[in-house]
Length: 151
Image 1 (cartoon, rainbow, N blue to C red):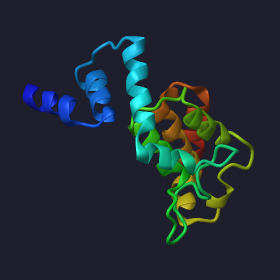
Image 2 (spheres, rainbow, N blue to C red):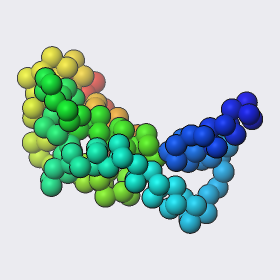
Image 3 (cartoon, rainbow, N blue to C red):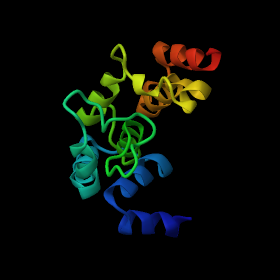
Image 4 (cartoon, rainbow, N blue to C red):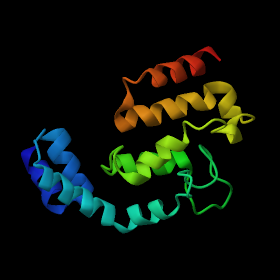
């Protein structure tokens, strides 16, 4: 196991090294180390590409859950999850704006008539994104989960 961890640290991307140190080795990084990793992650071409898809209002692309046919832009859900998986946090401007737009009245209306919305409602997707960002204990998350489960 230690050989694999060392290999990931030495050969992996900044996101992999960052997450291995924090989540597997459970190292306490200094603020400078943390910022250095986040700067390296943010500078990665794919992170920059995804960030460029964000609209001024904070929404990524035009759809929450299913991208239009032949779209080269991911869904809002996909972009937020990608940035979080890469190690960016709810404090990063793109993530902060993406989460904030999901609390606006009328958000997610494009999902209302979809088959997925009839089954899980968009509240569950929204709740899971906020939980992944670190808001799992927030009261609004519980309300969204209740709304989704109770129809």
